[in-house]
Image (tube, rainbow, N blue to C red; front, side, top):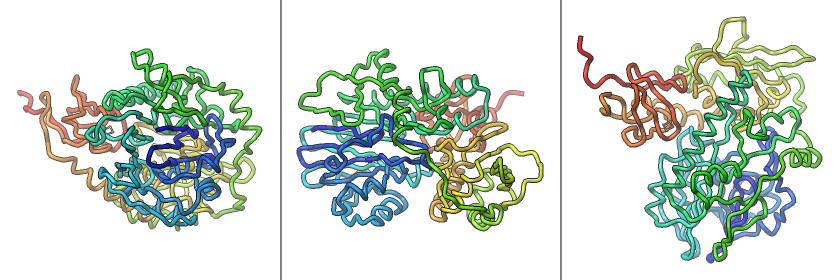
Length: 502
Ligand code: FES
């Protein structure tokens, strides 16, 4: 088997039973802010995209590049379709002419012309836009897991399928925190350091669990080529950005005795018949960004003109707020949304989740404030962008001020401004409120399920000094009262197992 890196999460797998194209992406994404780093625009896409199977892991625009697919992939190419809860992926591919879909069921083996494939899916609203999928495949000679962006609780399902030769995974999940927050620079760096450190430990846990002969970091970093967004690139190690280059993880792993992490930049191949010694260097970021600025124009919002933002947002968002009472109650407060404009007037609005209305901001104290360039917000409204997370938030074209802990539901609501997606979010919020049965560990009784992604806290949790830590993403709770110390609105049921003596 031969694996070719196509940039970011993109891969071409040439197996003994046919070729597979995975997540090819080159068109600027997330309001045009992201491009692959290093740039992959010069690859010979016509021949690389001439394959027997197409696999796309999610509808995130840095994985589903409709423009590239339309231009380079034959529409009669069979699509290996993950079993996701909403039909968005199929609908979007069908919308550009794809007709042949190989339906898979999460965790079950499908035989495609002698290639054995398994497509496990993660389907919670926190698992990316309408879910995300992994790809395990074996051609009888070699076995590969493309874990990609998926962050499952563990890899037990994959391990049960047998030894894996190559494990490809994203190391640090794409995010906007702390980059989008208005923070003192030292605080931003400290938070970014913590997030990266935790992500590296999580990635190492996955790597150790699977024990593959070769490990390949994929899925980042993006390049932010516009000068105004340049601070989002991690240049040097003294940086408040979480967008790391895979070489940093490779070196971190090598320091800990793992010498099988290799880089697959665009066009590089790993041939399992002759894998060679892991090599690869990070490109010079300054030169790469300068070249991308020269070759790729900056993004500009639609010339939407004067959009009546208060009226449009009321008409759009109020029916959605009414539709999702559990989500609105979980936020339970107002979020200020300022459309800033140096030439025209600012438009200052309040998304009032308690009252479930959109209204003008009149000076009241709020815990959350989002500031967006007015032309950018007009663009989002004009195109009815239903996922502000995979557009506005990840683009870095906003700034956030917050008092107190994060409430994850704010971004989840704004990432699901569509009735089908929002119904799914509402069902998830309602379901997780239950938290499973109570369990007792180290003198504390608490709910079994982590409120984040329902991990079994008896398996992945640890208790120290009255604080429970979930080992999947590191969230913490004070067990004396269940308060979540990491994000707001994620408290758990907990109490001492034995009532304290009077
Ligand atoms: S599953 Fe994410 S912190 Fe527990």
